[in-house]
Image (tube, rainbow, N blue to C red; front, side):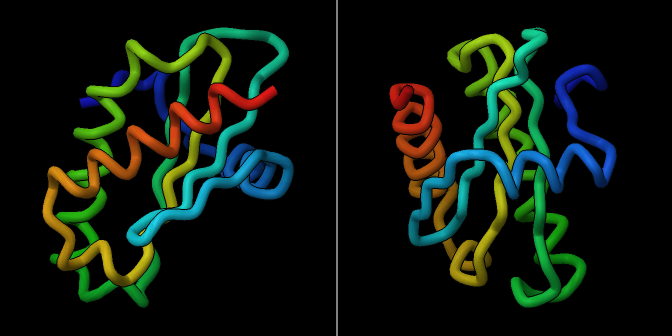
Length: 113
């Protein structure tokens, strides 16, 4: 589970990352990344809309995204703020495929200047 300092919780922070951050689109998820000029630990946010499925499915996807973020956190540059937006195909995606996609997206965004 992610520590509280590693979570994006306010609506304003979500809006800022989604609107101003760089974006990487994959089959199951859209990844947004914005660098915080103040640094700090990497922070993660998760968006799983009702179009993805019912409440049980959305919560399962959110738990999977949180587990992946927990595994990726040590590799993410300090000051990164990342929001994962699940797309409807994520409901039937295999965990290993989802993890590979998000790993690729975050490394791709971290590599860009």
